Amino acid sequence: MLEAPLPEGGQEQARSRWAFLAEELRFHLGWLKVPVVARVHASGATLAFAAPEDQLFTATEANEWAWQRALEETSDTLYPRLYAPGHPASWDKAAAMATLHALASAEARPGLMPLLGEAARRNLPIFLDETILSMGAGSGHVAWPMAALPSPDEVAWERLHGIPTILVTGSNGKTTSVRLLAAMAAAYGWTPGHTCTDGIYVAGELIEAGDFSGPGGARTVLRDERVEVAILETARGGILRRGLAVRQADVALVTNVSPDHFGEYGIHTLDDLIEAKLVVARAVGSSGLLVLNADDRILADRSAALPCALGWFSLDDDHPRLIAHRTSGGATCGVREGRLQLHWEGVVQDLGAVAAMPLSAGGHAAYNISNLAGAALAAAGLGIETTTIAGVLAAFGASRGDNPGRLESWRFGGITVFMDYAHNPEGLEGLMQVASPVRGPGRLGLLLGQAGNREDGAIRDLAATAAHFHPDLVVLKDLAGFLRGREPGEIPHILRSELETCGMAADRLRVVLPEEEAVLTLLLWARDGDVLVLPVHGGKAREAVGTRLDRLEAGGWKAGDPMPA
Image (cartoon, rainbow, N blue to C red; front, side, top):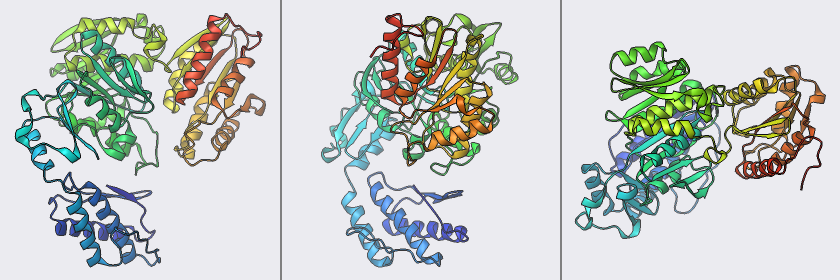
């Protein structure tokens, strides 16, 4: 798959020629006869086609050649004839064909394809990357270097098997839902492996820190022989760059879909984004369960064409979609009279009082109540017993270590501090709705920043959401490591402009670019009765801020005291 720009005024002609040349190349290379798929969008076009799994690098070369050749043939612009030795030259078709044939022959691994065929016949998971082939998953997998593959009759097939696997995607709540599901799996007696934006974990142990919400982190979990169930955060970026890590999953959960990350990888509208998120439905297929948020109207509207069994969750157990789904024998989870109700296989299960579940913040965190309902329904889809699910819901979140960086809170004398990941307008609004009732007559301080890969309009929407809650001080920050091509201070400048447009006075706005220093600014400003809301995004910054707040709380620090080093 290649995403690339097309010439203005000649997009359709260039797209058509690009697709024709790609089809022609595949014919000459003897590849699969599967249609070329081309999609024009605001930033150009995306063109994709199938190729043998042992020749995907050659396929990339072929696609780039077809695109460059199409531009030269259809545009009046004189494009530079870029060339590197060993790569096909766009201006010499015959030589390019010879080069691509040579590349395909060098890349082909005749020993790989029989293994893949036999694994597919046995319905085994397959995980293939540049250097390793593994078949089976977790406790039932075996891996080989690509340079030393066995023959099919050398494989101990009877030892290989899959493991229960769940994919979690959405705009907000993915990491919290993954952590909930991992806790439920562990309480049920399985050894869980999970991935999220904070790292790779096996049996609760951090294997590697970082954002591993794509296929690379998933393969690490699925190749760990200790793992008996895989819970995989599946972010939009990973889907669009690399596809899904797995071909089959038992359950997929879509928490919600809201406008975010527009302008990347050909995604420019909410409909585009929903299509990307719902790719997980293809892995679930006809045998698994797709758990969806009935309170997300657009997501609900797009569900009619999905081929898999559905489960619906909502903040209201009497939501019309839930009632209709239960009537036809479907599974649901929702809140009725303050209690979380799971309807599974025709039986109603009471999972407990929502306000008593720590993650709900006394029933005020509506977005976490939604996460609780979605995770409970997904866990039931994995076969976890209801008593286990209810037990985890009653305890998860009581300790900060359960869900670090998500709706954590501290008190310093009369100051209340909330720290969360809230990275888009919907996430920020949910966090502010939790913090606002705590505010009372005190002041509200807010930390605000955004990653550089958002469009200016999305950055302004975040500022407008903040302004709606009338904070007394907003400290604007950069996100170290997430500038994504922006200049230092550029995003705080956009945020400040929008906040002032929304009526905030200039003396209520400060710019402190490093996240940790920005947090310190708010702590030194605060006095008894104030509430501080800290969306902290960088992994190292979250760890440092959390450590500082823990030490301040343990040391009895309060407003007006000197700040310890």
